[in-house]
Length: 377
Image 1 (cartoon, rainbow, N blue to C red):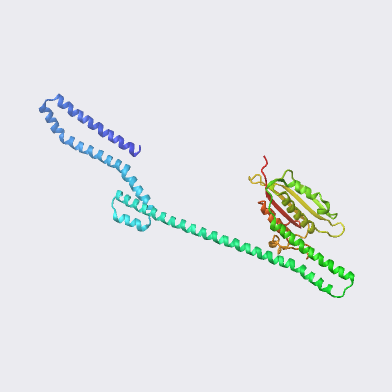
Image 2: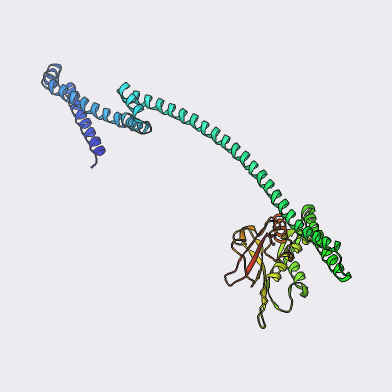
């Protein structure tokens, strides 16, 4: 029997005994005459009074205990919980100023409200500080973007000066030679070389004009696999006799974009692979691999991936960070303008994609192009 059941049983027993005594007294009054009843009641009076006081005390104690459990103890627990949220100084002030639970509860709640208001002010100050820091960060980011643009323009201008300056120097040399007494054949040779250098400058400037004036056409559905197959159908372009061509191209690889821009993108990569392949002695063949397909469909962000690899010398680690910069080339002088990969990067970015050029584990390099795919229904 638990404490509550015991107290209930005790209360019922006391009430039962009291009822019996009261009933006995009533019976005595009704049955006996007044003098006899007075005599009996006088004899039982003291025990009845003592029993009544005892009963009242027991009932009062039980009631006080119940009231304490209902009101005082929850208030004490609430005061303790509130005190746990205060620091030592606030808690000491609360205990020194108030003696009972209700007063301490009031003081604790007041201190908690002050703490909440203080935390709210600190939060507002923190938010304001973060907003200020965010504004400064955006300003710094804008300055960095402008600085990067100026740096890019500077690199472009320096590269242009170098690429144009070299053939101009050669032309100047040939012109100086033409001033001397030369045979007709030599004069023709010098003038031919000078015209070749002028053509090189013209080609370079034409590519720069294409880069500067290129405006992507309105996006339209383009099947990447069809563009690749059209390019690979030109044997003299990408498949000389000494090159093996390996293909693994999926079907219906659909993206939104500019067909001509995508054709130029893949053509540049194929030409780079063709120029890089090994062309060793008898029985040694170069190899170009072209793979295209879907990836990322399970993750909900499908992309079309095109990989164009070769078995050439691969990418030099020192050159890797500069591969997509304008006028940077690893080809011999006069063999390239250094704009091919730069243009590729611009075209891929215009289509919301990405391009990387890395070494393959088995040797050679591989260009990996990812383009957002059109969801197939």
